Length: 257
Image 1 (tube, rainbow, N blue to C red):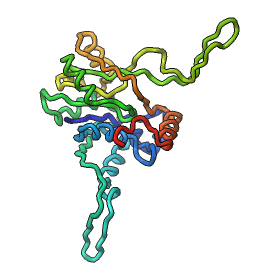
Image 2: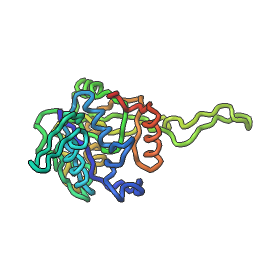
Image 3: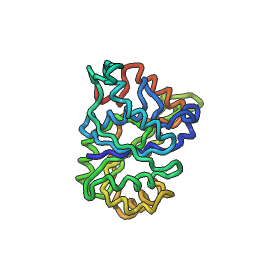
Image 4: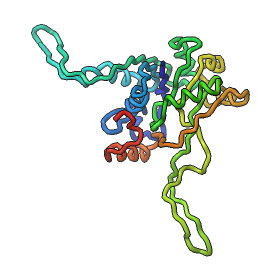
């Protein structure tokens, strides 16, 4: 099953890092966050990736072009001009990287890789900046059960501030960073049918606007509620939080360990 990853945006809210590299190439624990996302999928059997590149997309190509080299022990025979690979810890992934334009919006990026998808075959899609301990099989099971054109993973975003319950001028209860405001949001991790591509006019279409809104209005957008861990890397603060979780050895999205 193919997995489309939207990885071409500018990442302006994390410009401290994204002015040097595309947002999906920002590292957590020494690996780009897109690697973490791909590991989530691959550990559950989805290893055929289509990456929609844009801003500084050449860095994604260079990373994967050298991936096997960097994950292997090698012998360079300078006289014979050969390279011999020894221990290889590279994953058995198939990775297609497509330049979908520097200014193209999310829907347009998906539209541009439509020719790489098999008509009538369910595919997966997500953003290049969010991780979760999601069950891909659970998402697909919900998608098949509902039989709709699209299924979105609905999550509760992590809160940024502690909450208090005050009675008679006294704090009766304090909760550190409760999840969101109780509402679900689009957490990415979609299961889609290829006919959703017909809802995308072109490059200037945001996937989250007309396509998703029309799917919802017509009863063709299912929801897979994920109440486990989910976190997007929107800001430097988010990046530092994910890094601290990884360094602790208890990163919840590390479902492949």
